[in-house]
Image (cartoon, rainbow, N blue to C red; front, side, top):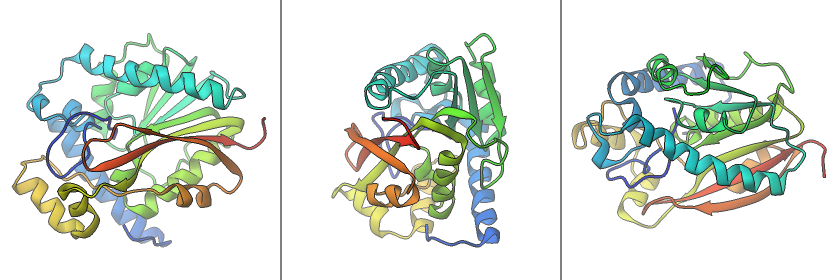
Length: 271
């Protein structure tokens, strides 16, 4: 899974639940996410990562797709250097890496990149597009956590417009896991929708029950599988990361129905 801001139409974010603590419900939710993104990865992997109405049916050129990742990652990491200079450039986790758009860009700045995703077809596409010369490892993770990785094993976790595709309880669990796997002095870079805008599409996502939105995506817009969307407010993010510090929350382009923020979070110690 991965998304990036592009011009899009319909009931989803441009280019790219109810809180519960029961593992059983989390597993059911994760299984549905796995099925949906496996289907998307099997049919429209690049379009599903970067939703653009002009890119349906294989419209993305491979190099154009990868260049869009470099255009995002370069300025974002320059900003991170200003805000969290203690974050090293050894090992980075690209969470919800999808077809590897951001993983390839991150490989220009880090010694080692681990791209993790729930969709095996997406990871197959990511391996096809790997331009890193072997410095990216793509990992399938079908668990509601990051237990594949040890504590303090990454310098940075980077994820952009991925968490909103997960049920809220799962998304929040992964946020806590991000803090666990990052070394003290490292950082999280989290791009998420802060709130819906007061447009028709934004209000649909805010007030219309998810099953009806999913039906509209499948029947009206002919999506191969529905794409869930929800917000993650800054105050909630701070509550999920009590031992970390949100050092900046920058607005960036989010189309006509979402307000997106990119949060830079310092983990543990470090000035």
